[in-house]
Length: 167
Image (cartoon, rainbow, N blue to C red):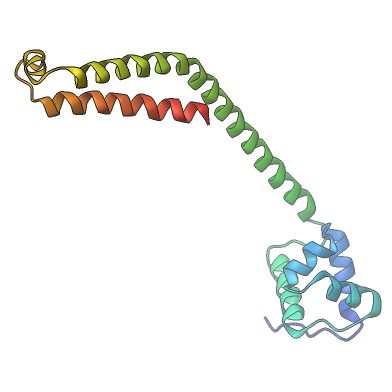
């Protein structure tokens, strides 16, 4: 298909009609054509020629729509864009609700984790105050390092949860 070359005044009429029938704002149309809104405004109001690349983009866009059997007015791009935004906002709202629910659950767990943390601090303090022989008796076959690391790991786990909750 050979691209249609637009005449000087023809692009003003076509772009205006196209933009209005498809429901595009000047900003949206300018983005589609790869130009700024000021250039599009000058083209529409003063009949200024579009840059060559923008003109090619406009021709390509209209030809693609015709190839899909759509004429201006068949498809409401502004409505489609609004529907996409609405779907995005709805998705964000659902994610926000899910996050708020998780926060509620974590807040319920916070007092329990804080209690657990206090208990572990006491255990760790008592463990460090024990003599070597006392540790050996309590360990009953486990190495001191193993027991201490288990206590520290549980302590760290509680501390992480508490810090997350407080944020």
